[in-house]
Length: 249
Image (cartoon, rainbow, N blue to C red; front, top):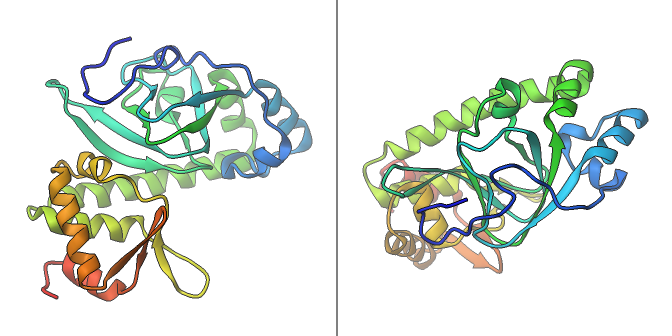
């Protein structure tokens, strides 16, 4: 398999979804929301068919146009869904975190992959054969209900992201993205966990790494955000929202 996208590593397994050997236990299964409520018999079947693959940073997990032979689950690490333009530019679509599943469109429609997925760091992915995934979509009420909610949420997220990309001011795009990525923690603290690199954010927002760096530095200098290991703490959410909406600070 070849890719003309700079910085990405082709994986020998990405085009055909060939999995490495590996096993998954019930405790690991419980951390995957889509599969957390399976019966014992259902869980046993899934655990017997899931196969695990390890991906290095910048390695392509699935390739756009490849076979949709498996439903995939992220067990550890962080992935980015990207589309690659005709001239080889990577456009980031969304981020995936542990517990997320992906590749469902190709599985449901029995069509080629509609986007590529690349590892932002060392990651572990599990593959469930298409036939088994389709069985649970139609025979497991818990899986079917969660899939419906997922597809509805995905439409909503994609709509938000399209609106974000329509912002002409690139710094405002960065501020708006942080607003989408942040999570509220116990005690009211708002953080962006596992903050992507500046280059990965630039890919998502169709801008330059330098623009992302300048925007984040400006927020830090104003005391709006604070970098803490692999996360970004939003110290002043109201000011961040105001800047994202085009107001001055």
